[in-house]
Image (tube, rainbow, N blue to C red):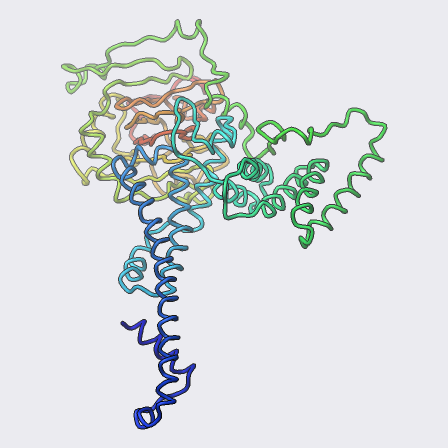
Length: 539
């Protein structure tokens, strides 16, 4: 009703003001009003047509999301276990819902807008969408996955209907492009172009795709392909403001390079006729010296386990040196590695305990932190991508029971240990190679705790992971797969208190699934008589 009154007001303004005293005195004027009314009806029908078109678009959007949310909410963790679903959720809530909001705002709906405003504070933002895109790229690098495999929902051991559209792939490429990551920009924008060439419809134009791709390829040093792509761009959009200038510049650079290198037959360029894929270009090196070893271990390649070493590994019942709580039900202990010694305990946590710990941790989950080696202050870092929470014994009897069990099994006091940390690794979640203990160049890392260095790590696996998520030790090639209800334990320090640098380890990115762990970092103070010093530095 309010909209109709607004429309009438608009018509009156257009036709001139009408006063009650003058209308009935002139049939001529009244006749004019008939035509005014006819125009008003026509305007009303145009309005209705526009509203119906808009409503039809909104209904179509709602039907699609209704089907999607029915599937996603039936098994939220299972749905988000697929990294493409997680990325598209970030993108959908950050971008597509905003488009719908703009559509509705053409004719404001108080109920929708107030509801939207109320929930917007909980929506992912641009940084979240960017982070999800980077997670897909991280998985792509670690597990050697082609962009097309991701686009078609093909992941190792599974095939899913979770697809990436042309616009999804282009947005992935733009995310990398805006970070000056031209290596990944090329891989994803090329995939967008491939799907466009195959006839898939998209919002983004082919010209825009070629524009981004040609410049990214140029940044990767591939002038012949940059020229070929720019020529395609000029052919479909001759008036493009940059294409012509870029083409002349690229051609000039190529001629110069050919002139300077005409005697050098060793110079090779990728064949510009071949599609760009993994391996076409070399991925730039980054800050991590053992990147290749670490990622190979995550893929299950290059492990250090041999038959000779395997013959030295055993399993046994462990009663914690006849600890009363373990005499009737000793722990099942398996050797995972001999030196440094890493052991796994079976049935370390019950399903009930796991669910209670997750229940307590979920409301407190926040971006996981690392301790700054210089200041000792906890801070976030790009190399640790997960969410974590810290649980105290006062939070529930389950926490106290788990702490007591860790003390019984290890024979070390947990009175000076850190709180039980619970971590959840979602899409692409990882913790790159790191030491749990502080090194000599960072003496203040745990100064605030006043309990010395981290002498040992006890890590509980609280979920199975469908693909990825292994704990790996790049120095000697150990690969430990997460298995729900089990725990692994190792010492970070020798008995002398010196750090065992072989224990540098990493949590591989989660490819498919949701990885839950909890860990206890046990400190030096209080262990003086429980783990006496050795006679040498490396005892």
